[in-house]
Length: 234
Image 1: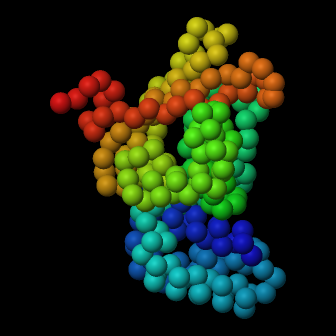
Image 2: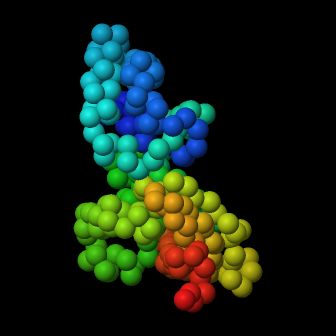
Image 3: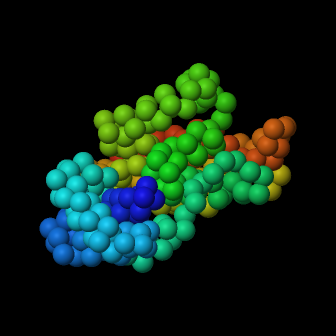
């Protein structure tokens, strides 16, 4: 089943990047096959079918250099969290601005769970009207552009969000003008797949008219320089 395959993909490629080294797992066919079998068995009533799917997936993982290129580590304690993750969804007034950057980064990190490109789909939904105008309201063009950017530029936002080693919110949410303010910012630090550090400033704004009155949207995500600073660098 499709969801079983996604479980296995996340086990190999889309964890929170701390823990067991995936390269070692790939070099250990017995360990990886057993781990795959556990998840496929949960979705199949036939042990034979489960073993068959696990073994075929092992061949896929070991033969594809791109399958696990987005990360090199796995944290087994997060597998249950991943299985329960339902995605970032769409903007809603119940979300505080401080919830959104972390929620979207988790969705992008698990981009293909619970559905293919669900993280990028949520990113599109939370983007302001300017982003949708640039892509002429075509979400397919947006997703293709983000995936291409991620593959081409490791230190781009989508490069670090989809394929990077780590990310962390460095600051608390700063709501400009106090609790009633409709602009909010937050700083995030990332390490790209090639070990380069970048910082990012999320800028969100609150929708003050229908539809989705009171919902927060992402206005921009500004990048630091190559040394991780927002000030001008030599």
